[in-house]
Length: 212
Length: 257
Image (cartoon, rainbow over all chains, first blue to last red):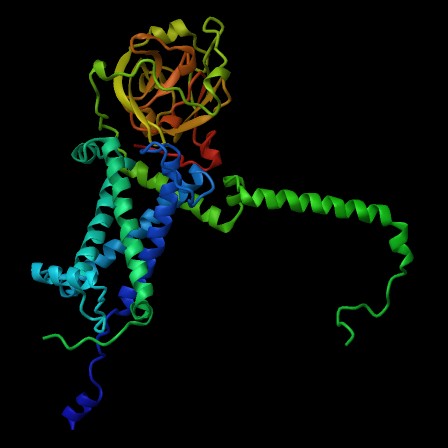
């Protein structure tokens, strides 16, 4: 009887994207967009690459862009930090993003070149997907570190030196942005091509098989 | 169906005719005003607008919070890196809220430095008196909030030495500056007492050139460029938040680096 009762009310099934992950994902998306848009406004004030200005920005002038940037940074750091701790503690990051095998990468590239996007099973990421997610997480970390060096090149002068000085840290911060924007373009395009993935990030997606 | 908002007793239409010219002028004014605010919307000139909105208020509140975080991160004993004199940019890069052609030179002979606030001896200072105080030189990086930078060689009286000399209350919160170019500015006391915070009178070993603040300017190694007022005419020590030219427009007040 007891056993039957347990069977009748099984532990809540694990979803592909638990509520916590969905909240953190969309919070991060909002913070990233504000940071990128306001960062473009700040960049326009003194460009790194001659002739490269961003036509769109958040904040009508530098002071406003800076206010947005230095507000959204807290959201990114707190939310991103929580996400990493959660991802490591629950094993989600390892489960979703590892291992990456060379053969799998070759396979995914071959299939993609044949315009075969395998996505029947949303619960396993292909090798290229895994690499992209790892790259964007590392880029986010690089943005926090290089951002600190730009914000406090005297208080954290050791960090600024490590990144090659103030202007070098600024360039790294710009390149980190470029990597994240590049990821964003691919990520959004693919989620629109396979809308089920977008839906899954809103509602939780399919149930996962029980953990071994 | 009769509108619920239609009054049961209608006013005499004659009123409309009596006041026709007034009504027309009101309409024209309304159009003008509408057009102006539409124009303004396309080029929101920033904080005057956003400051009154709830988003603007929230952003300013976070900026004030960031002032506190920066004060906590500020190490009063940490010196900014110094550089060899071969790295010094000559002349330095000019920047102000107006172009360099509009600089109005200050007459050094007639100039005096007024003192106000929580200071024991508030009698004004002249150039020779300041030159007689102990001097210090720094070769430090100037970092602008816009993102550019250069190495500059400054010397003058450490602000700490000056504040001690005039008997300023060193436990006060703020040191505020007034300048000949109407560029009010203010800093926290901890930064004012930092060893590399100078009342600078020379650049690269020569008397400060006019565009860079002759006869007296502030030069700090631990704050962004715009926090360093030029052509200083008055110093006040106070516990009341003084703000500043760019700070009042929305730039972060502490702006430490």
